Length: 208
Image 1 (cartoon, helix red, strand yellow):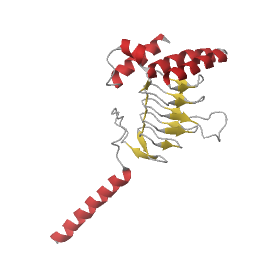
Image 2 (spheres, rainbow, N blue to C red):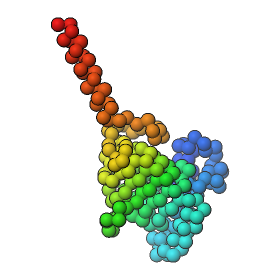
Image 3 (spheres, one colour):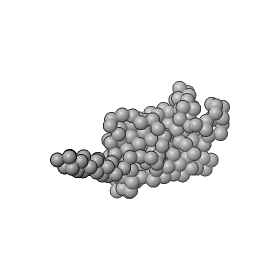
Image 4 (tube, rainbow, N blue to C red):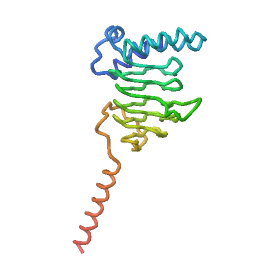
């Protein structure tokens, strides 16, 4: 557990440009406090001390504005930036080195039983205000744009944009940028390519 706490601290230093040192993160960052509390709550929950686990998670919710069910599985290196209004449901699974911004919901639709919440892969970014709802998988290295509403599986190395979210392929390459806004629109890109082809054809016709 201590190795995981250390990985979480290092993740903030690497990915939060406002983070100055580990001391400040440990004592002042609400996202780090929420995840730290969750790791304790998770231990109690899986040792059949569910009242204590729930007490820890609810106390953390009131202090940080971040609600994480004690049964949720969270990998190392999670950064919850700003964090206010984040909700992570009971059967949610989050991989390693993910970044989540304020107002994010990793929740259910109310139609499922058992596994009701999403499984988030490694190195995933979820933008501010995004809602990921349902028992599907968001693949490794995926990016979910701000305010997107994701209702179905997202492939690895891709970007989800809009309401409901549509997928933009990112050429199978991990994208480390934290930009949640300037994401390519696939329709606009297709139209640009089509316009270039028409221009080239017209030039060929003019030469003849």
